[in-house]
Length: 375
Image 1 (tube, one colour):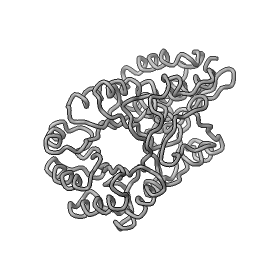
Image 2 (spheres, one colour):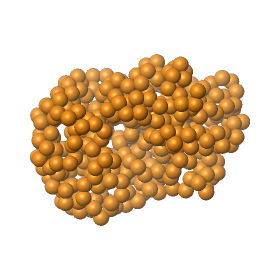
Image 3 (cartoon, one colour):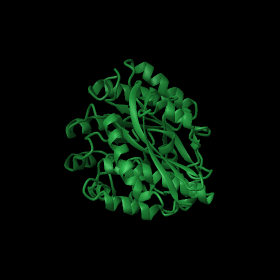
């Protein structure tokens, strides 16, 4: 039960949930000497990052090949130690370690006949509410509201809307239009559904703008505001925290436990976003989850790439008492609906504890080949 091969596979695919933009990720296919295959993923976003991640995975492979597939934690520390010069507190090395680590956990579970959730200690939730995690890109507010209202009507427990994303919605730029949209959306999804707003890389607010917007949104029961001031603005977030009772979400672009300690240490975060595809995998995720649990904050596992990271995030969410919901892409897309035999879906608006060995998803190799960049 030793690792025999590791293959890094960069992919590119059109994402309907991102206005049809081409998105990039890097998979790992790990094979043991008895034929067990484990899959991992890094959310690289850009082609150059995928190429660089592939090179680092290829360079790290000799440190993993020949090791027992069950030695996940020991291998993780070996890789972290190896990357001391080019992987200090973040960067492409973390992407590479993430993909390898997730593949190891998958292969370990398959080898032992256990699910990832079982390996993490079992579920602490019977179920988790599922919400639609979307980007607003249509120009007409009525069209956006109609789409989002239909997702909640179909059973989802709420909507998280990305402002300042690709497309022509122009949300995030004008106070009155933004507030009108939030009001219309609340009317469409009803009083009990979750409603979150997530600021994108195209637009961030300064503290006075954020305070004004959040006060106005709060009149329509905003559940949380995500990264309104970007990834790091402690003094700005302190001003926002003092001015509003609306939950503040940020931290998604941190890389490791030390970075998340700094975010939590500001006292200005209520919802902490963590992505196993960039925080050095499930092993890194677990370190961060422990910090979030100890701080009594909400853990929000990012799952906005392929079904591989979604499966990892789902198991990690069910293993953490700090998780309280799970995000799903609402529109069918290649990396969720084509990549695996049984896509990850909600059951009447609820996510149930994942089962099956390892990650619990069966990757379809032909789909991997269809979207890979290095054929």
